[in-house]
Length: 423
Image (tube, rainbow, N blue to C red; front, side, top):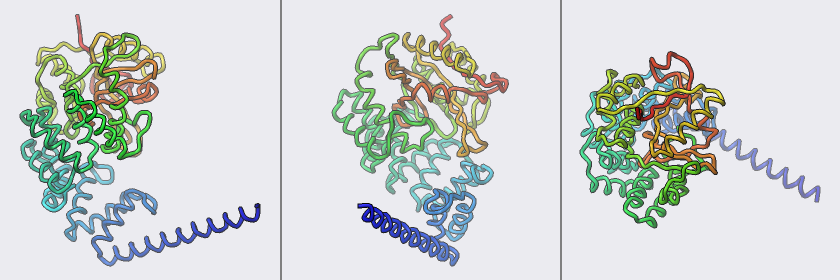
């Protein structure tokens, strides 16, 4: 038995060794083809280097190969390079250069057409033009880009940057679902849920939840498709809660009129959702226009607070210390507000090498909690409508903190929140 095990182990090691040699040979062949000006090989190598697939991850080297393919006329490589300039993680962020690459490639690359729509929608490297954004998203959808169809559907559903159109929203959400896009399935499921068609909602959310790995809860800054799959799992878990009345001290859920944000417009969009909950019809872009900073840039929380006064709403900023005692006080406040049927706006800070500058901030709403499971419910403008996500108390403690929310922070780390001022 012992000899058999050793023989089996030796055979397995030999197979792994052969596989490793084959993979290395294939990589060397790919490099040789790329060096010989094979455009497809250059782009394939760029993707491998970017993703660390079979080779050490190297974003700078990936961009070098993508540049070669883009210069040779590859539309998908142009999109690759454009996105690097839009994000600013490898090269200095330059939305105008990104826009140029996307525009050059958009007629032939579905991803470039989607990203061009993102630029028009979020005023990245160009003047904002929501009508053009929707045109390009629809074109990308016709080319098979499911997320583009979902983004257009969400804009029509909430009336963000375009007039509300339930029929258009439904058609586009159905098309996104047909293209196997989890964001589209999340939205389509929500449409069914709000219409009382629970079986259809369950079917859409179940399918979406199986498209990517899910957990007990997800990370609030997951990639879009992963976040939507997790959202679908969260929505399935929350169905029973959403169909019954809140029980103070046990659970609360406050339905909010979600708006899916444009590029870099989380603060104004989260506040527009908060304002719509209180009866306003304002959208995220219109809320942003009440602030002095340009479209497509971050927004100081002091300016957001001033904007709330301009639309006749009374909010106040409250902060808590970033330690455990501060978190206990902050969550006691959260539960008190939610038990009274009032959501709360909070600011998160994410830290990691994946973010340009090492960190990123994000504004979103807290709209519920489940005490027995130590979970909170978010209404997040960065994810698919209805924006609902579950988050653990431990993750809330880790992410709900900020020193970036503006001049009001004075550079001091705290747990900031906007609440309705009932005085």
